[in-house]
Length: 248
Image (cartoon, rainbow, N blue to C red; front, side, top):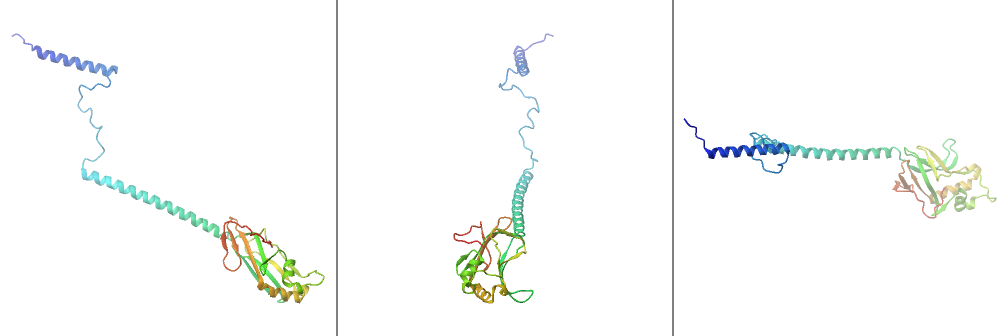
């Protein structure tokens, strides 16, 4: 029985074979880049355009909202932790400053604590917990600055001074530009009536009500205070002596 060949089908099959062969050859040589592919193999494009969802819409939504909520909570926790650390640093700085703070105070007495005899003293004491760096200290009598005990005695008690000008039994201490350790004290002025005379003792004791004192001092951390010894000291940026100040 003769075999019939459909010429049209044969031509189409040959053309398709040649097309696929040319495309495969171009893929091997790299000369057909940019041209559309003529065919795709099964499973070639799967898995490249899809997300990582579960495929269940409500479950994907819950997972997304939970992740967003966790991110917000983490951000809030981080911010609060930073604020807490800042507060801790600030508190530590205050503790360190408090542990080095000096506090100067002035007091006076008319009796010797040992002998209980008349003995005039004006005392400066550092009652703080840290050293006091005294930049300047000033004593004024009726508003006028006094630079030494001799100047003070001439201003307040001239009539009671010896005629020869030599005063005995009077001792004073300089304090400006010095460091006073914590709990330390010194006598700004001392007068022994047995050596200086009773008249000078009485005159100076009476003049104490007209004496005013002012000081500016700092801690070892360069925190500074200005004090007039009539209340709490005022914190200042630096110790700068006013014009006309006579340091004691």
